[in-house]
Image (cartoon, rainbow, N blue to C red; front, side, top):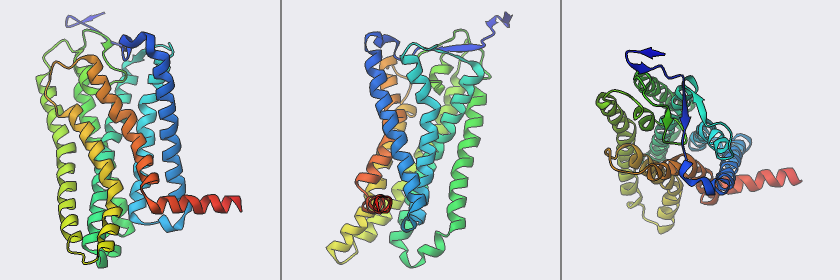
Amino acid sequence: MKRENHTLTTEFSLQGFSSFQEHQLTLFVVFLALYILTLAGNIVIVTIIHIDHYLHTPMYFFLSMLSTSETIYTLVILPRMLASLVGVSQSISMAGCATQMFLFVTFGITNCFLLTAMGYDRYVAICNPLRYTVMMNKRVCVQLVGGACSIGLIVAMTQVSAVFRLPFCTTKVAHFFCDIRPVMKLSCIDTTVNEILTLIISVLVLVVPMALVFISYVLIISTILKIASAEGRQKAFATCASHLTVVVVHYGCASIAYLKPKSENTMDQDQLISVTYTVITPLLNPVVYTLRNKEVKDALLRVIGRKLS
């Protein structure tokens, strides 16, 4: 069928990892193992925080929301990617592609602003400890999470609507999921306006949260350095270390993917970057917060102890 000299596209074909035909089984095993670890780690974090009343604080409320969001984020992408690696159909309907992109953008942006909310929580806890319970009450925490989700939904609707209004000439997506730029490359017309929109959105959802987190940590560090005892400074730094580690990796990978100019990067290079923020970063969250966080480890031991007894 023809419409304005363009083929009416009803489905796409995801070409991710097609250049690694001889290694696809190995990739399947590796990604499946990482996916299982990610799911298990995030589910353990959410369960521990729900069960252990010592962790019913704003910091761990945000962490449980982040783990929940990361779990859905990986569910949107990884099962289909794993299926394609073992020879299941690589085709995806246009509606399925739009849905995948919508959910990916929604939860990716939600994660960015949840990390910002966690940075604000650490700022209040260290810089205004006497007012912490007032400034970070339950209503404020719910509003911050609701705001993060709302921004994700609004931006995703805007971005996806702009992309799927384009006419498409080809159906082969040079990626393992329906990411924004690979889908836009299929368009028959100039996508400069869409590229500018994507860049503006990327700046708003990456640079602005990064700047807020940076300001929070400048104030936090200046406050910590005023603490007289070395033990007090060490304890204050320890409460921020896990969050700061996740922030650096999360924003760093996303910035490389979406703030870099259009370049001559190969399909394999772009996919390697995407694997980092769709597979590695979600796994980093439970690993960092369980291995580097004493309170979570203690809570896990308490829960295990209760189950054994």
